[in-house]
Length: 329
Image (cartoon, rainbow, N blue to C red; front, side, top):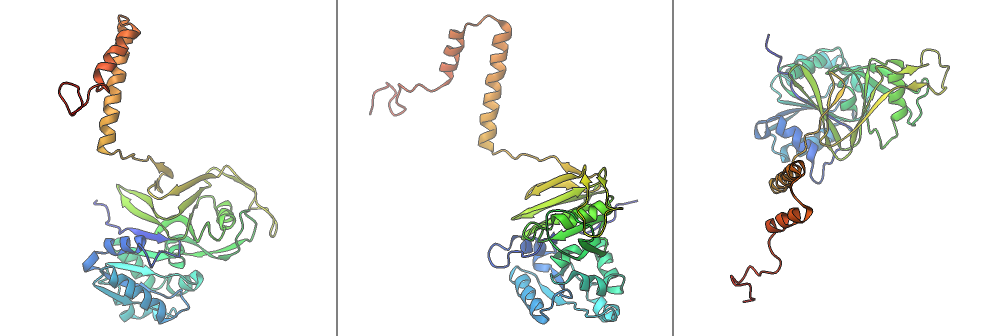
């Protein structure tokens, strides 16, 4: 059977740049079709009302999108409205804003609108979200909780997400709000989940290639991943708000340009790009090393002979390139 053409996911840790380079928002509009993009904005998590929709409408149109459509259910009843659901049918990109992720989850998960987002993703539509709109893309979602670097029992609560990225829990504003402890608490309680923490103005871009989910990092910060597959924990017996044992957790901190295989839970080797002029210099150095190795192996060259050969390869500092007879012009 052919592989299903899942669309890419753009999972932004919040506070994305809207004024200067707008790198992440530009990438979203480009992936959605650029001048042919038709973007549906879902601002349900936000308490700002129509203002947040107007902000993203102006941004996406300025970045070249052809059309921006608001989709704002305020109740689960709204999320069953056929007219509202139909607005996603022709979208090439879906963007969920920040705000209260528990409100977003409570209103759209398990409704026709939530199902329409999943179906759009499965047919190739780009799905993006920032802050709350990032957390809801995982199978398990941080509902609320306090910050702190030490994982403690009952530090946070978990709700169901849309499940666009399976077997994960995603947190946002990660480094800026010190959310290491609460994400590690969830992984300690459910070691099968991959914990993904995304910094502000940073995106985890998830694509589906060759049967694998690949995560690539873009933006200003980093993506932190906790893999508790082989961890030892006492989360099942810890009392109230006591610190948790979390030993053997594999930690990955991925800056921009790095990639991670979510399916196999391993770092994708970094492909080093070398400029053409550097490549030529490296090749020349390698040739010199090969010649030197041959000379040593032959054992028939003195150090003086080697120095003389290398000197012949270098341009003479005594001869001016401006005059064939070596005199200054």
